Length: 313
Ligand code: AMP
Ligand code: MN
Ligand code: MN
Ligand code: MN
Image: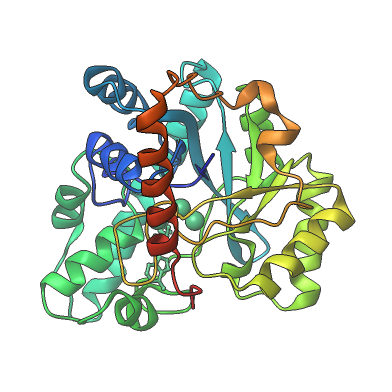
């Protein structure tokens, strides 16, 4: 079973529709996919509809990625197996979307002082009714020729301390965990190594997330080395968290794709082992005919040997 428990659609800053995302996940042999858009559940109903319409052999976990403020950092908490019809969660996420719009207005205002003509409407148009994110600002700035790479545009305009950065005003870690629990889900600390925290701060983050009732942390994502995974898992064990894994897919790149690099060693306890009732089991597959069986085995072997990525850098 291949689990990818963190991905984005064009309802936030992913490039694909839910249907195209799911089709790609099936192609990439993902069995269970969580869609976790930024502060929105908009992609979940279309995703379910796409699975039903095309009879796709994949299970969807209803998810969300909530932005929180922790000291001066923006920490992302993934909610998995939340009830997308939960009124409280929907209202709370609507308030995050309001904050996103306010922030976007202020970002556009600040950028005008740096030779970027007012871009609020253009950015909103790029978001196309979904969550407005810094990624949309990045795309706009690239379109108008202010930078040639995503990394460059974040580094020069959008990262903390840069011209277009607006100090965040999200909810607290504890609130996000509570929202997720109130909607029946489990709370996962997203990509713990992507906040540029030193060891002391990372330990503090894991401790405080666990104390706030957090359930798990992402131990595997595309670009982590085995040593990094061990380090995060050691912290999980120290604070009683289990492990999740996800590609944080937005679009295919040379270094990331759905399902890629998501290996965990057998000693690591995962969210789907810890909370089996929340993770849909695969449909029982019909028994293949005897002669088809050996062909299938040969194909699988081939696929596995050609599919091994060079260790993600
Ligand atoms: P927001 O939630 O609006 O602050 O936007 C955050 C999103 O921006 C993240 O989810 C990433 O998709 C993207 N992002 C943040 N930093 C970078 C970066 N250095 N390069 C590319 N994308 C980034
Ligand atoms: Mn994103
Ligand atoms: Mn994130
Ligand atoms: Mn994400």
